[in-house]
Image (cartoon, rainbow, N blue to C red; front, side):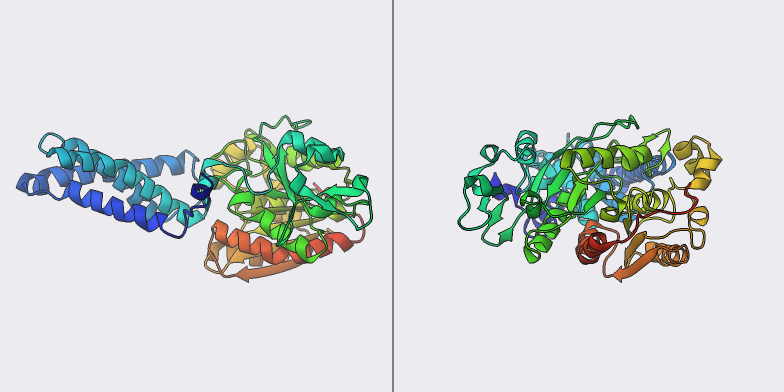
Length: 453
């Protein structure tokens, strides 16, 4: 199973192999000698497929299920799956036994191909193990995490123990994962009580760097990590390779790296709260109140905005910017990776009613035009990053950088190679982590703003 877990769904033999089998199966299923098949049956099946796919696309867009733009080829791939099913049913009676077997096999193959092609576009599940939700490297359990936090070395596997210094006794052994290639942090389940917000959410994941277990423990910054939608809190540790990025940083800095908290801000895979308080839940209160207070109490980390940041990709990037500028007393820095200009669910009308419950004042309070008044902020830092091929978000990053800088925010902007996918997000986080960590370690002041909404 371990070998299968590491099979890539983005590269290697699996994608081309499945596509080849799919193409062969469809060819055998579709290619027939009957004149009526080519002149009547197949055109009707293709037309029916087109109508269904068009109707599905209309529904997803107008129901608010899918708000982000997606390539027209998605419809072609989904349509191929439906056409394979219709062809198998329509040709069942006249087909030979072997052709029936192939036509039945072609249906799941086309579904698998559609999945692989869509997954390749976003890079959401890099491997089979990620798709199946199997444990990540250095991932422990909630019980083991309690032992780690309680400094009970006996609850930690022996291969996670590293002598602090030569000549010290067993009591000075720190529970830090060690490998020949360098230090590794610990991943553990993170289930934050809804507290004040009452926000229903999925469990997340916590990354603790090696230095967290040092004695005395150095002051470590905290970065709350948000994914986009459709997605979940496991996107950053899997598709975004954030733990590996933090491990690489820790290996170059004597085990020191930020604590990363991968939390859920949407409640379900396809839901979209845009991290505001509204009909879809009090996500903003959850992220600005419940999350930092729970992490502070559990990890014994001071609630000091000088050492707290919030980061996100896509919808999560929009959230990171909004939470940074609306709650600078909580987060002293934000990382906006290809986020939108403001929280939105497509049209302004849909956004107002679905996201804010018709509350125009709440919608205006999240508008950057009102938030980024000149010289409003002090001691708040922001990073805006977009992929060069993602032209819409490049324009957003340019505009927000200028406005944020005028508002007194210390800004950094970068346009990197890449599109609006998790490959870009992983590379962007890897690029900004050193400067963000250095800033959080030396940020002066209290991260306050004047007249915060």
